Length: 479
Image (cartoon, rainbow, N blue to C red; front, side, top):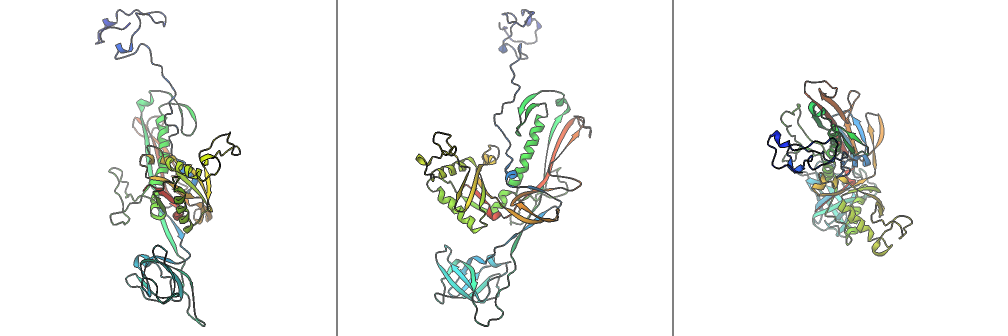
């Protein structure tokens, strides 16, 4: 029975309700939910278990699969990468009897083409190819070096506004002295600096006294009941995700002229230092790696697009094993592309397991394949699919990462060690390990470090990413 009118503070409005000795519904002891604006006669049915509407929400794991983490004790990490073994310049300007290596190609680089060298001269598209002999090398003028050449097929060579040239050998007369050109080993030096990442979780003393349990299943696979520290648990997972996201997305600071610069910290967070940023994975690949745009890998010409990538890898380190971390759309496109190449079954269907039996499980996906001399292992990268990370933007379609290592001298260990091309360096010493620090301040939870009626859980890490041999990585971007 519903009570007429509304409760406006009159106690007499409840007089006609008749209490009953048992928890039994009668027509005079029932309050309908619509009749009340301050309480309920019966508590709602509450599910104590949290619904996992987004599944596993963490996006970390990429760097754990392809890299390693190692300590360092400095503000900067520096490494050297070997240069090319052979000599080539692109572009060059050619006339009938000269090859001019412009300042943007020769400036700051030792001229390694000497008199007596034999060279290949080609047009920009590589379709016009001629052999020539270098008779003389003029002194550099405004950074440009001019080679006087004689063609083999004819005394003159074809003029090119933007040609290419590389050395394939030399030729000298009998009894020659002072022959050859001394070439120092070429290398490039790169560096990166760690950034300090911080976050915290705050809960007041009053909230800690309001106990409420929630049964949850965590992102790491464990389950159980959590009190108010459920938010602290999620804050920690979020911070661990941001450690990886920062290594992927970080950027160094440059000014309008393209020179290294800095950012002034936010007010109250100065700390005495300027912010210079750090080189993340995407930034390193944009500047030093291979970037392939507009690849849709559809059934019509997807294989031809993929072969373009292979041809570019041939020009680099030619590392045979590579891992592909892709967004969902690109991953499915590659599945479709590979299915078209499969001769088994109608339409290139692959049954994949149980001896490829059509009566058993149907497999419409490919986890690995071989093309040319390269092996590729394909997986979805959740970071590119999540609606609150790169899935919100959608410009990056995937990354091809070489499964290789480089041998370097580690000053901390005092010996040569092999490291993955992709690895993280974090600050650590005997006094302090800053890989992942966590501490509590405040006056709640048994910790008494200040008069603040709250508990603050702090997180800190100081780290950077080293992308070595970036020329072997491929960044897939939308056009």
